[in-house]
Length: 408
Image 1: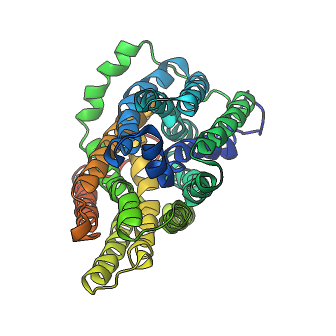
Image 2: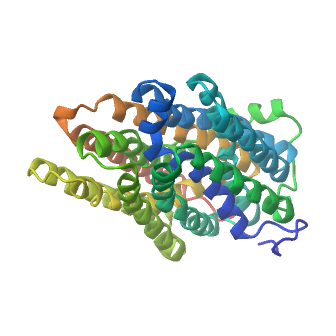
C-alpha cells in the first residue's frame, strides 16, 4: 500500500478525503427527499413530476459513470474529481435560482457530476491495495459516508420547515466549495499507468463484459442496491400520503435505514478479511430479507404506523452495508488494469438498475394498497441479489477464486 500523508497531494488521498467525496454525492441525493412536496408546490407541478428529481437524478448518475470511469483511467483520478465537483457547483446554483421546473431539472442533472465521488474512490482504493484489503477499505469509506444519508434527510426536512426548500441547495453549495478545497489540497494522483485514449478504454469493455465474474459481482451490487433504491422511490409517498408525516419526521425515519447501513459497513470493515467477500455478500442478502419479512408481517398483521414500516427496514441497510463493499471490490478486481472503467461501467449498471427499481416502486404505489407493493419490489430485488452471488460462487468453484492482487 502506498504511503499517505494528509493534505499532501504528492501522495494518495487520505481516507477522510474519500469519505467526504462520497458523502457529497450522498448529500446531493438524500437532502431534498423531504422537500419534494414543497418543491412541487413551488413550481406548480405534480408530485410525480417532481419525483423525477430523484429517479431522473439516479438515471443521470448511471449514464455519467460510463464516462467518468474511463476518463479517470486516461486523465487521472484527481483531474476528473475536481472537474466533477465544479460542475456540481454550477448545477446547484442553477437549481437555487430556477424559476421553472424545467430549469430546475437541468440544474439537477448537472448535479449528477458528483457521482465521481462514488466512482473514483473505488478505483483509487484498488490502485493502492489488493482485493480483500480493498473490500475492507471500501467498507470503511462507505461507513463514514453513510453518516450523510443518516442525517441529510433530517437536516433537509428541518431546513425546509424553517427556511424553505432553497436552503438545502445553499447548504449543498457551501459544502461543495469546502470539498473542492479539500480535494485540491489532498487528492494525489494514484493512476500511474494512464490509458492511451478514450476509444481504447471503450474497446476494453468487451473484455469486462465477457467476464462472468464481472457480471456476477455487478448484478449482486445492482440488486442489493435495488432494495434501497426501491425504498427511495416509495418511502417519501408512503411517509407523506399514507402516514401523514411532516418533512422533518420523514427525515427522522430515513435515519433508521441509513444507521443500519453504517452498522453493516462497520462489520464489513472489521470482518471481510477474516470471512471473505462471498460470506459477506450472502450474509447481507439474508439480513435484508429478514428486515423486509418483518415489515411485511407487521403490515399484514394490521399494524398501521410509520415506525412499523420504517424500523424493520433498518435491517436492509445493514444488509447493504455487508454486501456492497465486497461486491464493489469484486467489480474493480476482475481486471485491475481497468479499475476506473470497471468501477464506472459496473456503477452505471448498478445505478441504472436502481433507477428502474425506484421508478417501479413509485409506479406500483396506491393509497389503498399501503406499503406492501414497495415491500414486494424490495423482496424480489433481494432474491435476485442472492442468485447473483450464488452465480459468482459457482464461477469460483469452476475456475478458482480471484487472486488477491490481480484478475482472472
